[in-house]
Image (cartoon, rainbow, N blue to C red; front, side):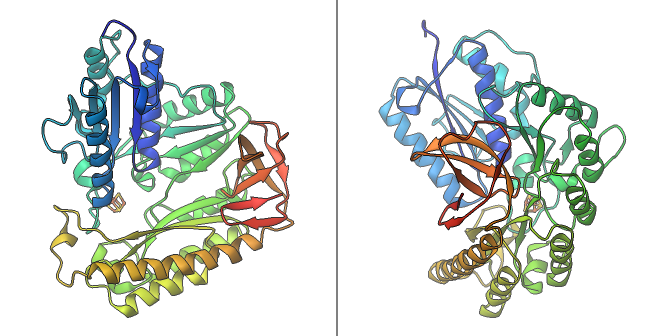
Length: 413
Ligand code: SF4
């Protein structure tokens, strides 16, 4: 390849994957690679997700289609599905265990200047929001989840390094830092053993102008109530938004999944959150159709979802992941029943969201305008509500915003 390679990224899955890919993209661009759209690229870097069978299928489909259209192109596959793809499809397959050598290996493949082992790239200075990876891996082995087998045991970034990185991001002009991890609630500073609430308390004191947002948080693992109090007392430094992968409202199913709580405990957690932050953004993940799920279990989940002001919900129809205990559970639910229960759950989620968003009408929110779409400027409030502002709103500058109408995908003001 004589000219600088044109590299495209296809990224699937969680925020952690997005953050990892963003860092690699930036590092390759710094070494002379040209970042391109997949159709124009000579090299496709596919960062994959294996959390559902559908995610693996989607990555495989995209990869095959790109290969067919670019017979001389090169493919680098990384992420949770890197070991699940048929052999021969990728020029380089780097599962999570080999992530530390991704940059070196890809630079060698593309003839770009080498990189140091473990080099971390700063995010590009064109965004208002930066991701900060604090943690990776998980050892909880929930019955349906393949992630611990793919990402390995929990590891955490030292607190000192995170505090320095956060101060740098603010100095670079980012106004929001999203703390991400595979299971953030397992964060432990390798030097002192400090847990997530202590880390966030220290982050809130970092010099610089901007706010922190917490990525998905496994409930009932760390001291959730301490986090809620911290957000409530932080004067907006820690966003009033929590995304909890609750998964089910049924005691029987939660036990089957191997989750560390039952319905009463998760309700107590949600009560603590709503008590500390009555106007918070509240997201959750839900699984429909885990093996053994009865109609009563599904109803318990719908009830829990309807009982709290969820502003967002991701509903996952259960899909078998080979290698997980749930794949061998008796009582697999027929696919049409899974689809019907997922649809019913989504309907409840939509109505719950509509009611939850209505509470924000006329209430002043702090929005960071990010981009223009369909003639309006769009940004996210601290509560993670998508807000449509006038076109003239200043990009990247925290702006007061009062929602006056609820739209299907956000609020208008
Ligand atoms: S805690 Fe989350 S990442 Fe860990 S096994 Fe359970 S679902 Fe998977």
